[in-house]
Length: 242
Ligand SMILES: NC(=O)c1ccc[n+]([C@@H]2O[C@H](COP(=O)([O-])OP(=O)(O)OC[C@H]3O[C@@H](n4cnc5c(N)ncnc54)[C@H](OP(=O)(O)O)[C@@H]3O)[C@@H](O)[C@H]2O)c1
Image 1 (tube, rainbow, N blue to C red):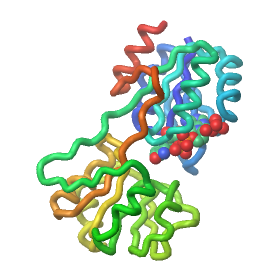
Image 2 (image 1 turned 60 degrees about the vertical axis):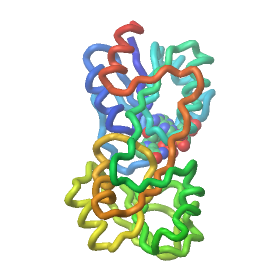
Image 3 (image 1 turned 90 degrees about the horizontal axis):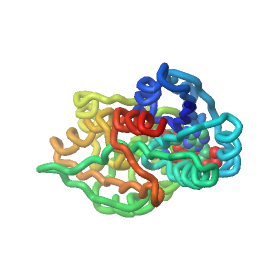
Image 4 (image 1 turned 180 degrees about the vertical axis):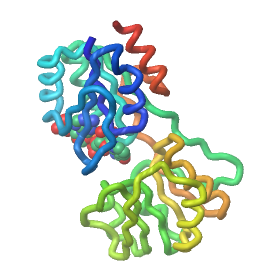
């Protein structure tokens, strides 16, 4: 059996580790990160060339099942996977880690997009900790606030006029996040609802400091695609699909 994992996440790497040695597994990465952490098994890097390219790749490599384990905000590839799997008659599962849930003392502002997040910043202070990644900074380009932008690789323009870039890759620690908020005198944090433990400490640090967090809601999983919440659940689905 040949399983294609559309990856780029911690969960995708964990799933490749679980499946490696039990089935043939190929992980696909978009190639956005200069030196990605590589999963076990075979790896291919770069876009497929839309739905048609993905169908062609799956057919040409005799793929029996696809797991879309991409980031919850990687909307285009998830849409393409749904279309391609239906066209090629290959079973598809979406692996999505659960989203974050606000707790006692959290001051979260839920928004539907990065553009809405930019608007929601009005009145929340001048110093913003922006943790939504290097893509999509254009949404904040005309914002007057000062931004601390944290990303794995350096972001491209356009970005806000007053920006400092902090290159770093999770997992992040609570102590580290506390220090950033305090030393950079942050007024507000912006995040996507990525879920997972690796980047959650900023939420705890913001709660402790009494800071608001603007949280971008997730796009929906494409209609009709079953989902698993953990790599173990996805591995069980593969076993049942064999
Ligand atoms: N969006 C985020 O916040 C975020 C955060 C962390 C990690 N990531 C990871 O980074 C990658 C790119 O994210 P994105 O938001 O730019 O994706 P996207 O907007 O959904 O995808 C744009 C295009 O990139 C290519 N692509 C995306 N993921 C791919 C994969 N796993 N393998 C091969 N090609 C892929 C596809 O090109 P073709 O049409 O040419 O096939 C796709 O049409 C994803 O794999 C995702 O898991 C994203």
